[in-house]
Length: 62
Image 1 (cartoon, rainbow, N blue to C red):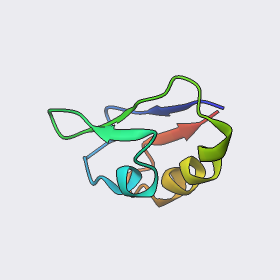
Image 2: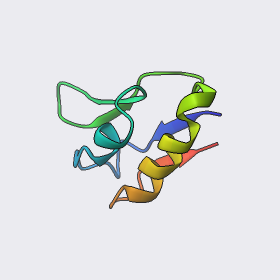
Image 3: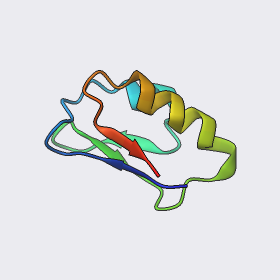
């Protein structure tokens, strides 16, 4: 599983970081970034939760 953040949609709310800090972080500019190229199996559910919770729908899980 992989996750991407659409830089044009992200507004830096940080909900993804709260949902799964092992996979998401905020850049120096305050926008979400994915820390892991391949999401570890133990974090897959948390990444899905983060994607659903994103108010801008900036996270895609694939």
